[in-house]
Amino acid sequence: MHLGFIGTGVITSAIVTGLCTSQLPVESIWVSPRNKEKSRTLEQEFKQVKVGDSNQAVIDHSDVVVLGILPQQMGKILSDLKFRPDQTIVHLLAGIKISEVTGLIGPVKQVIRAVPLPCVAIHKGPIAMFPHNEDVCQLFEALGSNIVVDNEQQLESLSIITALMAPYYAMLETIVGWAVNQGISQKNASDYTASMFEALSLIAEEAKEGNLDILVKESMTPGGLNELAMTTIKQNGKFGNLIKALEQVQQKVGGVL
Ligand SMILES: NC(=O)c1ccc[n+]([C@@H]2O[C@H](COP(=O)([O-])OP(=O)(O)OC[C@H]3O[C@@H](n4cnc5c(N)ncnc54)[C@H](OP(=O)(O)O)[C@@H]3O)[C@@H](O)[C@H]2O)c1
Image (cartoon, rainbow, N blue to C red; front, side, top):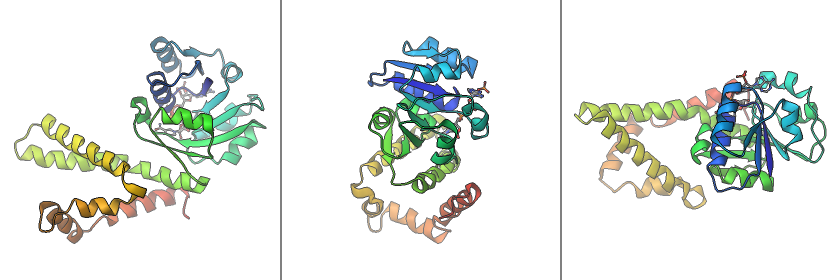
């Protein structure tokens, strides 16, 4: 497969790094000349990567083209470019509907919308996509947990969860801060906490049919420490703040169902 990227920024760099350090055989990866520093760095680091002379050159060399530009740049950049009817386009632009991209690029084989995260650079994390496409699924499976949803609205709802990255780190920071106050070094407290939550997330990922309530129950021995912690949290505001935060973000992006 020949893959092309229009816009070589944070997310493109992460995807290209993830692909080039995976087992997936990708014949060539063309990146656009902007950002100059990022594209040159990728070319120097990975033998499959080449910097195109222009956005059009990247498209002309590629079977699958990934759009990694900012939503506000989309109109100006895409209206100058010519795509082929045999090409598959993967658009990553937050808040932009597939129909908006299709309207700008003309007839192509398929336009896929996806929401990856920078942790794909280390082959971790979710990548939500819609609609299904075998070639794109293969790419994403090499990068993390690929989740194909049933419609665009579901993709937008899942993408709202990404707003909990900062609150999540803040939760870890709070726990680590408590441990440091107990006399544990910052490094040991942080390693322990991060490793524990990583393990819990791996188990949650394996939960049958995604039934996390079973894990909640299994983790609470009657009269035990987890039960005490859970009771304390429930008595002090529960997890309602998380839902409030998600609703606020959803309202802001205009994705209210
Ligand atoms: N970052 C994330 O975690 C993430 C996750 C999922 C989806 N996304 C989406 O992915 C897109 C890119 O996000 P990002 O965080 O990677 O942004 P970014 O780092 O700002 O990357 C945007 C890139 O577009 C380049 N660019 C500007 N004008 C261009 C042109 N005429 N032709 C080609 N490239 C041009 C910029 O180059 P210069 O630096 O030279 O201006 C920059 O390298 C956004 O639509 C965002 O919504 C991001």
